[in-house]
Image (cartoon, rainbow, N blue to C red; front, top):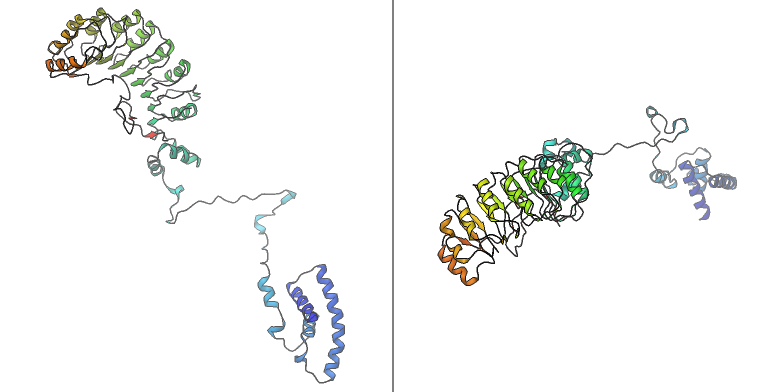
Amino acid sequence: MTRHYVMKTGACAVAAGLKSPGLERREKRLGEIWDLTAGLSGLLRNSGMSEDSLPLQELSCQKRFGIKRKSLGSESTPTDLVLLRSPRPKQPWPACLGKENREGRFVLARRSRRRWRSNSGVSWDHLPDELLLWICGCLPLPDLLRVSAVCRRWRRLALDESLWVSVDLEGLTQTGPALRLVLSTGVQRLRCPRAFVEEPDLSEPGRLQLVDLDLSGSVVSPSALRSVVCRCSRLRRLSLEALPLSDDVLSCLAQNPDLLQLNLGGCSGFSATALAATLGSCRRLEQLNISWCSFSRNHVQNLVETLSPSVTHLNLSGYRDSLVLDDVKVLVDRCPDLQTLDLSDSTLLTADSFLVLKRLKKLLHLSLSRCYHIHLAALCDLGKAIPSLRFLDVFGLVQDGQLVALQDDSPRLAINARPFSSVARPTPAGPVGAAQPDRSMWGRGCRLKVRF
């Protein structure tokens, strides 16, 4: 049994064409076995045994050393099995491609990029830009940013200015990188309230395309604000509520003659001269909210004297010791088309101002909250003195019991129906406890929003 195994192994190695030191040793051993079996074969022939009945060892040795024989059965050779289990031969390197390591240098061949194809046979690379641009227009802001990182073509399409017309960045705490990206896309309507705005590094020259800008309640320095506003010349609606300003910022605002709505409520840090120059250049202004600013008597005088006659909605509340009856007379003469006027917290005003206010033939909404020198008896005749009036706010002047009597005397007036002023504010105050907060901007929503 041991000799049969050795002969079979040697035949396998010979058939496979291997050349190794172990194979040479086995060939030497087979030669010795052949010398022993040769004599045995002669004895068997002399004894009359046929060659077909020779043992397997001798047949294998005959095949190895080229000894002719009549026939050999398939049982006695493992050639087919060896060929089946042998590795596939390596194909030679094509001569037309040259040498892999020409001139002794190692060459790393680059495989061509595979293009993904769908099962339908349509490739994304074969779609026209118009169709891909329409698809990008259906994506929200986070997905659109991911698409822009795929390749150069998709980045060019994802940052197309037609997709970035209106952007809402409310909710971002660090808006520096996002603001630079959005401004570079040519955005026209940007909403970014209550955010921390860093100094934007606007490397690209040229004017910005901003038309509506809301930075209400944001943390932004006057220098950072100036770097943005100084490049704007097409602003129509702007809200900088509760921001510290400077004379440079107001001089930049004067470069926007088409400004229609301006919200500067709660702002500070600018002079009366800069305020007069800005208001004098905005001749198309329709709504102005300039309440509760750090104004002196000189600020109020320059305001009413330079205000554009096109103003129809004005919030001038919060000037307890600065606004007097003479200022109201100048204001009514300059702006006879006022429809909404808020004079709340003007404690120096009395009922004598009603004789001036009745000259406003288009006045619809008047707010006199916390004007403590106005008596209830004068308020009862206000509806008759101003026939066009529909809304009257007198918070802090009338008690609950007196409010019913005032409502009976003026049945066509809605008294204390609007506790919050909406003059020039981008997002009016909604109902308390609303499930979804209002994220519109001057009556229109933004297409791209930050979602959390």
